[in-house]
Image 1 (spheres, helix red, strand yellow):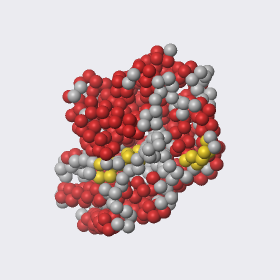
Image 2 (cartoon, one colour):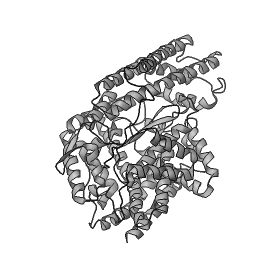
Image 3 (cartoon, one colour):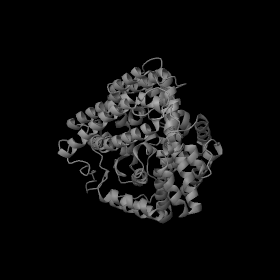
Image 4 (cartoon, one colour):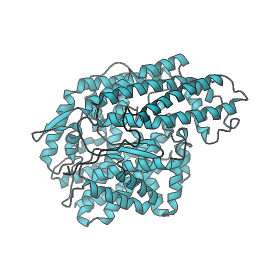
Length: 582
């Protein structure tokens, strides 16, 4: 860690504090908008009825009201969740987040009526224009709705069900510590030691981490059982064919697209075993252990300070898009990023929209190129938010499959620049860091998919113990990594917060990586002419399905060959890595 303190984000442009007049005014305005929306739906008799001639006017009035409400909601939610995610002991923020979730129930109670009404509207008759997809998806949603009272009850119970279990996971995991080298560290800092060049530290951190998760396995297993049990029950009641089906719908892809992508992924596993074997040789081991997956390699390994990383990211993004670089520069200059790992702060990294096309980024930075590329990745999300700044909220709601587009582009640009501009001795560690991340998204993500699929299948019958979750995780890891590893991580189900927030969150990351690589190849071929089309793609992700946006660039998502093209790029990097390793 650098001696100079890593930055904390500045939330004051949103509100000075929870008890400030500005926050209280925004809170009151949001309450007013939610109440007014309910009255508006009553006025237009919104519900499961035949379409009226007056529905054209009603549609535009209601969508404008929803957009206004969501614009008001965005900064309030960002401020409160930003406080909680960086300090889970902040009781005032925790209480306010609970109040906000309860307040927003007013909208959730209206959604069944609204969805049933939207499902019966003719897009042309109401002049839906860019909102056409909203109406088309409402028809599918209406087919999978319970009765209105049941949907309202489900929304109300979620606060004490799935949302409460997810909150429990976040609160418990953020307070976990472990002792490494005689020093007590937050679990996020312990996990960052996986990047240490010292194998003894990595191994000690791995065992300390496993012991820490085991010590907290009972509440975490209860949380996972609660989340998946609720989801499975509701999926069945809503007549989805299985627990995966609603995730495919949310991500705006078909089973055919997922099958094509996953077939290509599984076929690529021998490539990744070559990479793991080459890395093991560099580390002087017959096989990698789990604690070696993120280990740095190469004698040229340098420590990347926060300042060096920030400067490099901005400089390289400027070669691609001046506006992309400007967003990154603004993020560093105006303290958009919370980078320091600490007790009470959640792990991982994310970017959240705070309104007006601006963002805040949470990260847990340590002095490695992997952390630098993570910052570039999250800044891609920030640029995506910037490109959506002119879109109203209903048209900037996009699926996770397309959520990674800009982040993968940013990350690829920075990694390729590092390989191109840094001294020869630095190329091996940079290439390795890139492949390390790609292996997570291709190999490890597939293990997470297999794990979650198995959990849903078994959770339909009964609750699972922590020991059973660990066994399912080991099965999934062995199915993907195979014999490339000597040890595994049975508690990854406790590590990843995504399991507790979104069902089948995993495959969209693989989609995003391979789709992003395909776009990058287009950029390499087309140069500056590509950027305007790219920006338009980012601005349109809430208006068109993924397949239609892909066709604009000549991509067929249902073809296994398309996905193999992205994997071939990674295969070339693996071959380059093997050559450098020799």
